[in-house]
Length: 197
Image (cartoon, rainbow, N blue to C red; front, side, top):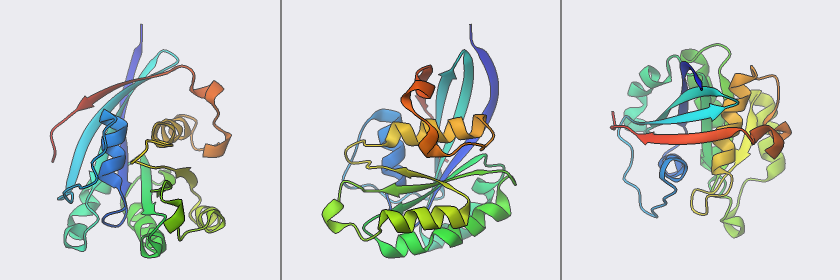
């Protein structure tokens, strides 16, 4: 029998066209579309995850990256437990915007919010502009963990969400790269689609 606990709020944020919606679609439905309509405001999904007999409800907020919606974002950031700041490894401007997104999160989310830098589109290696060393340096400055993903291929997607949840459960005392498969063995996902907000 599983024991229910409170909801955990996870937000994805970052510039437009970095692949936030594609990451959520791949995680929730194992689907990928080359063309995604821009998110207006935010979209919402729920994933129920069973870890060692305890059920966690992960509320996933996919936020808009366009400048036109920036004024709406603080209300979505409030009370966030986990923030996945996403950038496109083929876009230097999206990477350089990470500190600005971090500042927004720090103003609105919980003080001890778990920060994950999500380097997306790693399948486009020939177009990659952001070196891994740069990402590590940025993560140290932001006191963040790193996940490298490809929504297109699915590489790193499950691990990004599972690692984020484990970091939250363990109080942020460990780094993402210390999470291995042995620690993930008792994780079971039950994903549910909810309406967009």
